[in-house]
Image (spheres, helix red, strand yellow):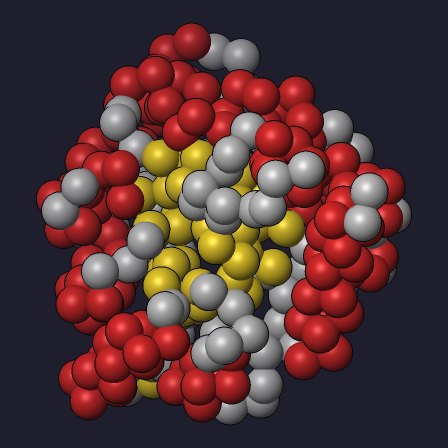
Length: 264
């Protein structure tokens, strides 16, 4: 079995501290850190300041770290097509703040909650038009539409985003945990999605998702890792957990699978 070619990462919320101490803690343990910037309101935000950005950039050069950035809100236009929707305003703030880091990807959700169960072609077409326009705006700020990685979400039909991928030259973020949560086999989904996948999220399911990978059957975790290795996936795989215990046990679960493969 070949060695993995993907970059293994996790989130910037592993120890109970701000982003920079988390990145320092993770440097040398992972190859990518997902910067989770959910608090971007005026007067209360966790956006890195200019000095922190320079330190993060220095760490990336010294420690062979890349960054992915999770945008804070599900991206959309206003219901009337207004391009000043709060999700776009906050997305631009995050992109402008982090552009100097040259992130591997900007991970985002598309807000389709109001239409995800609709069978009306006109309703779906209108949402798709607006979603594509929102992505166009974000791509202008990011500098390249391929840097935008649209994530699959639980409780949505598996093919919900396919019309968007047919129309917009964006990338995919395949969330394996969301597929497991929906009782879906991730391999058929990966077979279709992997050529455009820039980021993979992986996490276990217990009383909720985003738990340690120790909750995943080793044979199932092995299936997924073997598939990614066999198909020479070269993007980022993020252990999307939030806490040191879950991080440590998730890392051990992955290392155990890879070690078994080496010994065969």
